[in-house]
Length: 229
Ligand code: PEP
Image: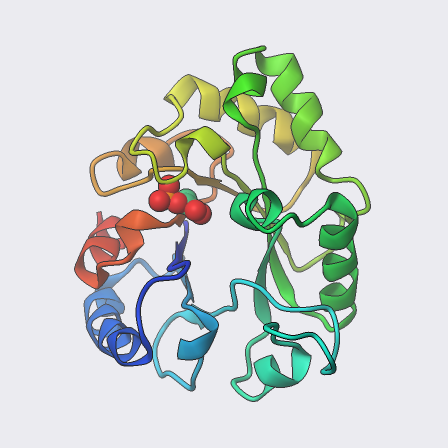
């Protein structure tokens, strides 16, 4: 299983350091096949020791340059970061990232050999139209994306389940991941209110290779308990 923690705009540099100290200690007992990723805010990127992969939540598709407020490849390289989240719904919805921009980022960081966790997910009104509408919506989010890229992980995150405490149902996750499995061969994560109470059930669903966790990942002990459950 893959366990990925997305801090979003939470944690400081010092609390991230404390988080890694706790997490590293706790996950020493994790199963050998399990893989842990942590995406802290850009201000907390640093050199950390431990059995996890440090990733960035976002970056601009450029080495460096005049892109106010952004970080580029040069800033990631300073901390040996080679893993990136792309296409998170908060960036698409709140920050207006178009599919074209998302695909441009994907191409740039793919050319740099980055491991990419590529996020897709439908809004509630699409989910309410049923499976066919959901699948069509999700497949459109692969436009311009090389789904055969060897360092790709896809995260299915229904927007209505993110940060709401309302996870998708087992049936919804199962049917969507089954449809996605026909479209992509890479690992498939589920994201959307995954927590210590529902992790085992989610992990047992066919075609679920891991989880991307927001709120429940903010506490190192809680996230570790999901990994060790
Ligand atoms: C996320 O935003 O990637 C996410 C899954 O958030 P949460 O776990 O809080 O729903």
